[in-house]
Image (cartoon, rainbow, N blue to C red; front, side):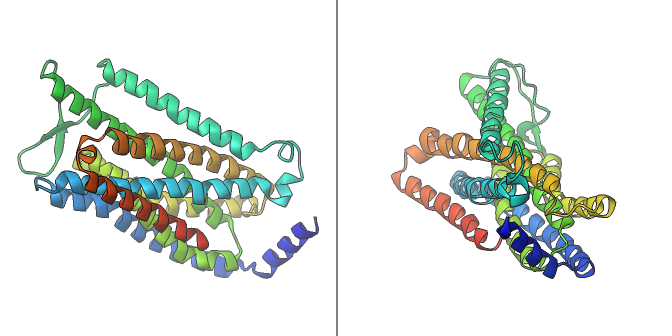
Length: 326
């Protein structure tokens, strides 16, 4: 309890609502710009290599880097934050939060939810019940992608189509998990009145969004969505954290709750745990395992497998280092 009182005293010394609001306005613009840069870079890189001999290799390396970023995001950023929120002295001193490790339980639920969605969607696709809205064929030089899943057409084409549809599902589920995480960090910053916390977060979260955007953008690039769908997914990622900050500011003005309020901490911990479970499953099962054990291009080239592992490690390391600041 003494530690809790000390933490509250330190927070009170840094509390400055006017300065905090000014920093939040700056962060909204900065984080939006860096998010756009991060998520669009892999997409533009993939479009640049489209039709060239190195296209498949470039996409594979981008995806491996992305998988490392997503895995580090879940294990080094999201999950520890969820445990910290539910272990806070104001929460952990109450029932039932002090009686059971809810962060771990909800993370497990997130993993099982992702598995359920993955299994059901894959089953529908394999039995022809999943009707795509877009197609793999490129329409007349405009750069937009279109799709048609025609009956017949050979087993190889069918397998390639199912793989592409699976990659689209992976990208969409990944975006859901990342959006959960982005909303949480945005709302937390928006509700905070602690300038000592917000000031370093502005820079740290900007880099955080760049690397997280690289991770999501790498998956979107391989999925081969149409230009409109790609732009929409990139836009949604880019605005989620800024919108979360605005939402947090509105919640503080309406309720007076800041990021140290027990109810806010509980919500942050639960949503973070679900998000972590989804991201852990998607990174390990649908990204890393698929490429390192079932990718013909990688399995036929030992050197490429080594380079892919280096890309995976670099992605993980880049995101992990940011945990020093955010």
